[in-house]
Each structure stands twice: as structure tokens, then as C-alpha cells.
Length: 187
Image (cartoon, rainbow, N blue to C red; front, side, top):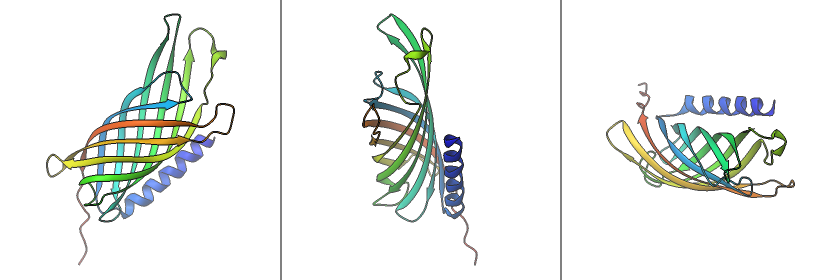
């Protein structure tokens, strides 16, 4: 129930921001991310889809989601499958102009883990839901008038006062996207 409520709230935020946006970008890419203190597997690689809205000359809001399936071999004795779904809204600041040059972003992320053990389901050791907040640095540049590419890296803190303790998340992402036309101003 908490997951559904969170997704509904974030969807409403996306729709309210996109209605006021001057220019939008839809991009697809690849992300590598890892979690310390939560997971024995070093990294997850998966596909992402992002929607970025220009809010002003220097600020934008990006909403990214990604799927990261992984089969893990535990020293040849046992194998299990972990599916990771991530959602990350991020506000970005571009010193030059939105969609051009370097950017600094602040983000909040939600990660849903689903683990399937083929040998013993009671061995589940990590939380199902993880929330994190952090920052990213990146660069975005045009390939043509409508097509652009982006490279970013970042880190997040995962506050968890429970038995597992506080952890960290890191990520590296490469994507390409399409810029939609700016809205025409009425005279």
C-alpha cells in the first residue's frame, strides 16, 4: 500500500511539473548502481527511462525509473535471482543552460528489491524497500537539434536505523534522449 501511495504522489508531481514546463526531454539509457551494507553483490546493470522538464533557464526536474535484474551465484553452491526496480526524481541546476553542459542534481530515490531463492526462501537478508537521498554530477550535450546524450555519476545516503544500519548507494549512467519543442507563446 505504501508503494502505491508513493507512486501516485510522484505521478501527480510529474504531471503538475510537466504542465508548466517550457521544454521536455525523454531519454533512455543504461545505469550501473551498487549498494553498500545492504547487498553482497557489487553492482546492478539495467535499462532506464527518464523524463526531464525545463523549469527555468538553469533548473530542470528529471524523473527516472529503471529495471535491474541480476542472477547471483553464491560461490558455485547456490544461485538466486534478485530483481531491482528504482525510481529517482531529481532537481538539476545547469550553470550554462538546461540541457547544455554540466549539471549538479539533488535526488531522492526509492528502490524495490525482490529476491527469489531456488534453495531456501527463509534466507532473505535485505529489506524489500530502500529510500535514499543524494546528489549527482553530470554533463549533457547535443548530438543534433533534437537528440542529446548525457553522462552522470552520483551517490546517495540510505538512512536505516534498523538492524542493518545506514548504507550508501552509488551510480553511473549514460543515456541518449529526444528534446521536445518549446511551447509557443500566445501574443
